[in-house]
Image 1 (cartoon, protein in one colour):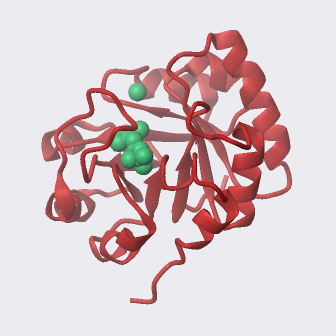
Image 2: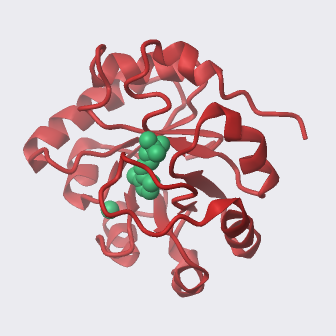
Amino acid sequence: MHFDLSLYLVTDARLCQPYGLERTVVEAVEGGVSFVQLRDKQASDVAMIKQAKRLKAALAGSGVPLVINDRLVVALESGADGLHVGQSDTAAQQARTAMGPDAIIGLSINTLAQLQAAPVELLDYVGLGPVFATQSKRDHALPIGFEGLAQLAAASPLPSVAIGGLKADHSEQVFRAGTNGLAVISAICGQPAPYQAARLFTRPSL
Ligand code: TZP
Ligand code: MG
């Protein structure tokens, strides 16, 4: 599946209020979100499969892919387009074998050593960060700043998306660092108007 990392929304059902997850995502996609990751650290697999199916249906026809954070069983059972894994999550090999060659598989990267160790032949993209400290992820790794981001982006043979504390104002610096886009939770989820919040992220002409 073709994919566009330019504005990558990571969901948090607790933050995606007052409209709830589906409406927030649909409005954000209308506003320019190009890629969606369903992330829920607390839901059961069964609840997350249901949510993923609803989200997949809501995104039908938009051309925007849906990937699942961490849980291979949810990605498989829901018909999602792929899986995003962290350093300690389901191995990329297991995900690729189970999901097949067309699935979109992404991996989170925080350091050059992690990038060098990444099984790039099995992956479609990497997430680089956190760029800044953020309240949206517990126990996140050390922030890398724009300097670290530029180093990782330059070393990455794969398309990359920056994450961690990013707001619309950071768009230009993120693209200048050489990545393909910004991934955000709180800059869109929990904003009073998700459509408008997404619209703020227009790709700057460099
Ligand atoms: N991984 C690294 S930082 C982060 C994740 C999931 C959270 C990003 O959330 P926000 O609100 O955009 O800082
Ligand atoms: Mg993870």
